Image (cartoon, rainbow, N blue to C red; front, side):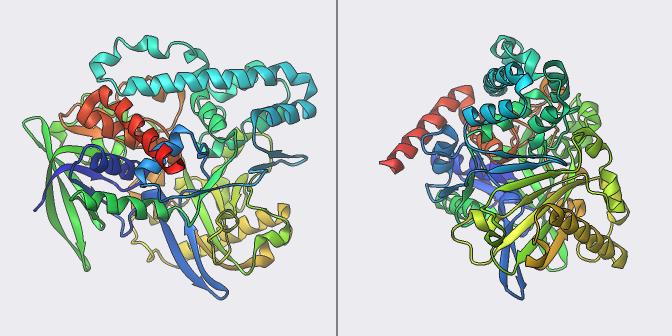
Length: 531
């Protein structure tokens, strides 16, 4: 009863993607195990009732790039979801960057961005032109780098030529690149405005991940009609249709190893107020729980890799707070059309990052404001979200307290932080506060509770230049039949997770030869939908 072809730990976008492709293309019986009581990872939604209606929010998906018809990412998404997720293009501007004395509206197309930036900073015209040329060079490097990850570790040693061109640019920090090529501090800040999409300020984030994000959104953003829950809703029948299973309330506790080979996963199944142990067995195991959790928590000490200290010492990514808001009426009343707002109180992103612990004292250095109900034509009640990065230390004293039972002091802190974020947003979007009917704040402790991520981190292994030099960043592990997928392998974000799941599924059964087979099938399926 508990024997499958593949066990996948975690039901986020990479787990869903891998499970769908393994079920459809490779005809495998897959079991997807999830610790949360909902499927979807950062693509699940939750609901609350307010005075003006029932509200629902996406916890991790806020907008997605490169979902235009004909793109590779759209083809893979269509294949994974059986064509059941439809996408709405966001209006222009899709991103608005707000600084103390100027606002920049990002609209679709490289030509527009170059033109508007050159108008604002004419003395930097040549540097702006070179910047967009370098973005393309680095993006191509990133593609070659990701392809190299599909090769077995031994083969990767001779594949360095695959990603040599552009590597010098890619492995600079964003700050190093900006300081070397630009003089105007305001322009430097503007170019770094989307750093929240990968969670690292200019002094830490690599040009590799920065370029990937810029290129990802350069032709605008998209939103799934009906919300991100449509993704899991469409994939679960695919898994079950192939004889597989999807289980919630099952926390992976140990990957079972026998004679150096992964053979199963020991889980704790939640039953009432307690837990029981349930073991599952399979020929192949994919962990999307992240490299740190997989290597330091799910393996016995005797099975740990020789690079375990590198994994333990590599820094975690950033944590955040998210204020979910139910609105009395449409924010279109304020002239909004669904665009995102990135609001900063200075041009120094690194200072804001260093001082994120000041949030506890009511100081907000920056916030991302999203209006999902304006992006989704199927919405019934209007919503907004305000996200700010936060130092985990602010909340650490309550880390051993149970979810929703952390006491009055914790609840009062959440109340204060909510008011701070609302006031910060109201300064820049007048009338925003008066629209609010309901609000609820999540903290890094909520992220830990539902995902297990260290310190409530949301981006896995951070995309510093050092990340791309680590040999253990790979879908392959030191244990036979155990693979990794997700943000700690091929890339960040929704599309990064999607592609990671697809590539991991390909190599599990076909090695590098499986990669073109997956993409060929996805393109074929996507074209059939268009016709």
